[in-house]
Image 1 (cartoon, rainbow, N blue to C red):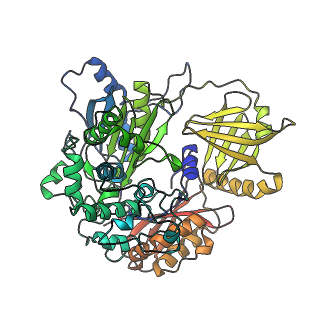
Image 2: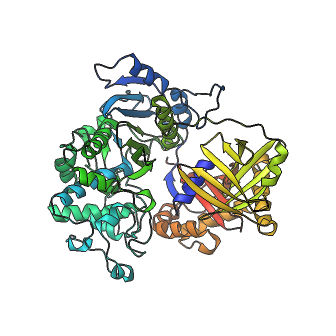
Image 3: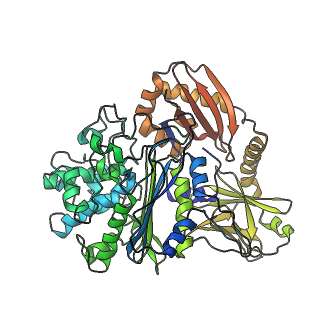
Length: 623
């Protein structure tokens, strides 16, 4: 729960479950040795390509200022800071893989990342799995809008009041609006029992995730669901009579030349030599190595950036009429954005003139991203560290800057505005669909602070338009008929989020809580009651009796869904022997060192403006 910026505000607006209570291993810090090795550069690669590869190793900031040389940290330094031993990148330019390169090592003290180094694709498995569905749709064996229970044989989606109104369909499963539960999966340690697919679907032991069920009327709301893709996996096996990994190899991976890739779970021992081992954010390796994911369709693909680039090239070719396994009609349908800009597998971003398709992934110790324009260009980045997502964001914008893509970092000019003008905008604004923005002036600086975030300085582009430097976000203040500030528009990630100014009475309690949070951060003193609340939370979770009335609705919902797994991990640790304050993060989260007789953990708690627990984390260290 580190200090946050405006970029995290966007995620809170786009996803309903943005705060989680996670049970993950937390290991002590170890040094990561980040060497660099060149790989798989085409034989005709010239000096321009080499210069581009050199340039992307100096990362660019989110926003550039004219006439000001940006600070560009080295990729190797950022890898070391974030404890990411290995990074692998493939860049598509003019409709072909222009270059691929590995940076760092497959494991601390181990060999360099090579062209054949395998990473877990995590959720990027979903759009690749979707290709098998779309092939069967093309062949007339499946229909996207038919009740999936007509195809399922060995397991059926249980009927309830929601499915009776509207049976779920493949289209809804692929686009995350089928009303299906279970956001994602934790995977299984290499020495843990692995559940069958039916056990995963029903949430029965040894499955560590809850039952996959429909709890919202299908087609009425978007909610990301890895559980929906487990249903897709079972459906494909039932319809074809073929194990999923074999089906994907024969129908998708081999035909589009993803020859290094496999959905085998666990990975065969003979291939482990090719693997980049996963690392925690602390810099220690995941105990036992890569987790096993029987949830193959949503999370089980082993691959390389070059192979994922070949998936992207197949989609580009299909759009142009020369796909190997997809027709132009199917590819167009796949990339038509629906609810929340989601297509049949990937998410659709960019502009109408230059759209792209993308998907990210996060498994235990792995982070990755695929972003490819429908024509021409794109990139895939894969890492073997839990903090690799931070590095991926920096790399993606640096690649976009180098290749002058439409979504490259913007250049913004700071206008000369009398700081006294800021006073008119000071206040709290209620954002849609939830959360607040509070603006304050400190001397010559205008500061913005979102719900659950730290303060971010804004800079004037004009008297009413302001921007941040730490993230590409623009705030425009709206005026009423009398010329008084009445609202605000936050533009970020190509989307607008609006806010209405609260009156002083409604804003007062929010401002008071933020003042306490900011003072606590500056002075590095825990907020009153945080230690007692965290201790009780951990004890209640271990007993399986958390007080949901003392949690935010989002945290309560996620805790209910994962309580069994959390209780199992905590219940055997016994009573807490020590709880020692460590630090306060910029967003007000208070971090403690928790000690039991058998284990230690770093745990944090963030209290909301109404005194409820907004978010919490418990990261247990392995021996």
